[in-house]
Length: 155
Image 1 (cartoon, helix red, strand yellow):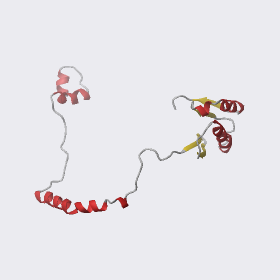
Image 2 (cartoon, rainbow, N blue to C red; image 1 turned 45 degrees about the horizontal axis):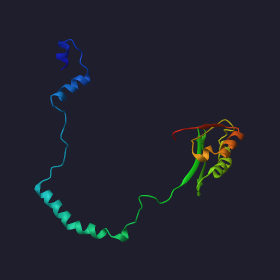
Image 3 (spheres, rainbow, N blue to C red; image 1 turned 30 degrees about the vertical axis):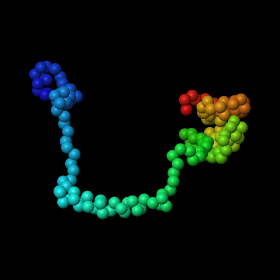
Image 4 (cartoon, helix red, strand yellow; image 1 turned 90 degrees about the vertical axis):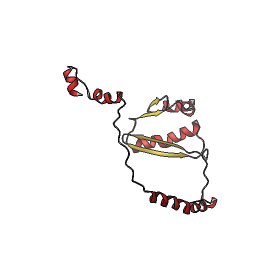
């Protein structure tokens, strides 16, 4: 291929050279290697399967299974923070979080985490436009605190 392209004074790239056989329905594939099974092997496998088929049916009893539910089953609400200096506190909320509970978590854990990580007032607080984040009480609380607040869309 390269010699014919050199004769025509046209440089042929690697992709052009490898694509040419494909255009002629010639594909470079190799058959998958499999172990050779003789007729004796196939018969032995079939006999083994027939012999042990009932073993699987007997072992599949209801007493041995644990029922699962695909949808539902509860939820968990966590709040946490992190920075380049490390990870902060992690809070598990047992109840549904509203603006008042969210403010409590921030008062107790956000500012304490900033102190523990030695960030003092040199950090940016980032959250999305969830209703509890944008409530009037939260906006007022954030304005009173000496921190930079960024609201992020699309989280």
